[in-house]
Structure formats: C-alpha cells, structure tokens
Length: 57
Picture (cartoon, rainbow, N blue to C red):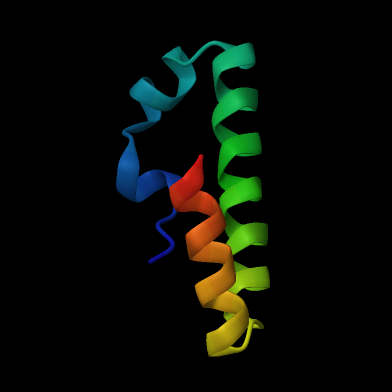
C-alpha cells in the first residue's frame, strides 16, 4: 500500500510542492498510518463498535 515519493511524483513535481502543502500531506499520511495500525489491533467486536460510531457521524 505504501508508495515512495518517487513513485508518486517526479523530482520536479515534488520540488514544486509548497512547504506548507507538503507538511499537510505528510501529517495526513502519518495520521492514516497510525489509525490503520490501531484498527488492525481491534477485535472484530471492537471494530464493529468503531464502524457504528463512524457511521453515526
């Protein structure tokens, strides 16, 4: 699932990304990775409760 930056962008495209946009993207990815790790540790029952809570939002 994880792709390296060079698979997503050419060097020119990567260098053209503003620092604040790059920071935002990296933070978003870190949150996603952390949440994925937490969810993989849940039991099926806990995952069901989580999914129901998300559906109510």
